[in-house]
Image: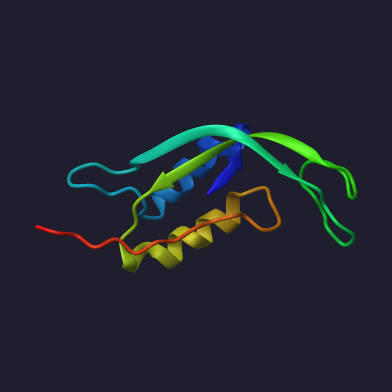
Length: 99
């Protein structure tokens, strides 16, 4: 998911508390890539950052983590609860574990 830099720590904490990032005896495991998000809010949008009709660039963190299937609903709810954007861009990929 992508989140403004100033909201990233709160989001990491919320998803970790909801069950994301469990690897072995560790919790709250994430990986972060810094970047720049760009968007142009259209009519009817209520942007957290920027103005309708104007392109905005935002310093963002791309946060990656793992999540067990039984925690996914709670983790997605945590994202929606603390993320400042109207529609957080969140990707969910199933991962096969090979032993």
